[in-house]
Length: 320
Image (cartoon, rainbow, N blue to C red; front, side, top):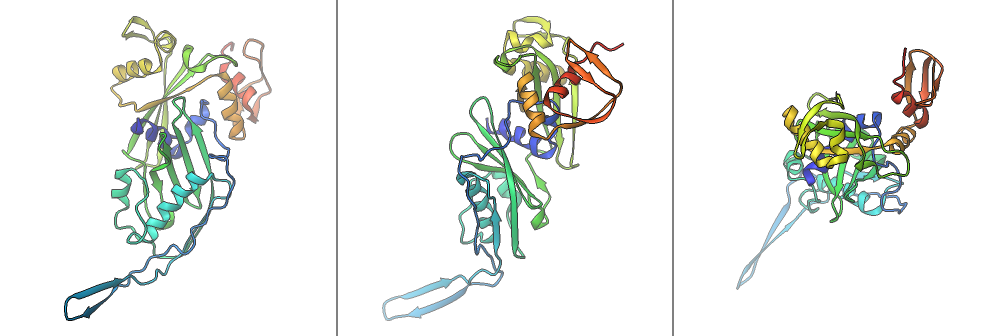
């Protein structure tokens, strides 16, 4: 489960290309519903060695080790973040600033190994924002942007855990798990008011994010491909409705050989919401459109399309 949600979070942060197809993920909001300012004051480290004193008595010898006061401060300000998500981010910076005195936060073991030995060498004043999403199984994912830094977090019911990070403020490369991640995007033909994940998968894509190369890509799969499903041969588009999304993903794994780690399901309503949440998309409409079947009534030229028009443009297939 965690590997799947990490993959989805990685795709969101590394490429943000899921915005082009919409999703059930609803970005924005305050996470836990609490508006607060979270600041890690006087979180510091020092390279000076500790001071050790030894007191001798007639019966025993007592050794006391005193750590020197730290000398670097990290301030993390997320004015719109909910308490527990902000605390998870704050705890990570506190641990990086004072690894001897602050407990290690909840994080992916691979990330902890990547950060082992990292030290803060200057004062940092980080201010930023975050985006959160709820998956259909009630798992939550979040992306925290603080200055040049990016943190990925997952909450599977036991609290937020940091599962990936790009800590540019410390001069570190990004770590989001395996170098290349694969996520399936299933765009269904569900109209508003219907359960999106149980309809036909009419827009099928594999989203990849290559962390090492700071790049990503989308590969579309023809929806009418004839495939072998557990219940028999069928068009790929029908598998999502006849079986379920997990079965569709497994079929695509079988025919591509790619290690798809998870999936995101969308429909008409979620597509519109996603485009609107990202402030529209800039599209160069190649020619004037007047298609009543898709409701695509657009003039030619570069323009910003909001959710409804973006959906109409993407669905217009009655073209001379």
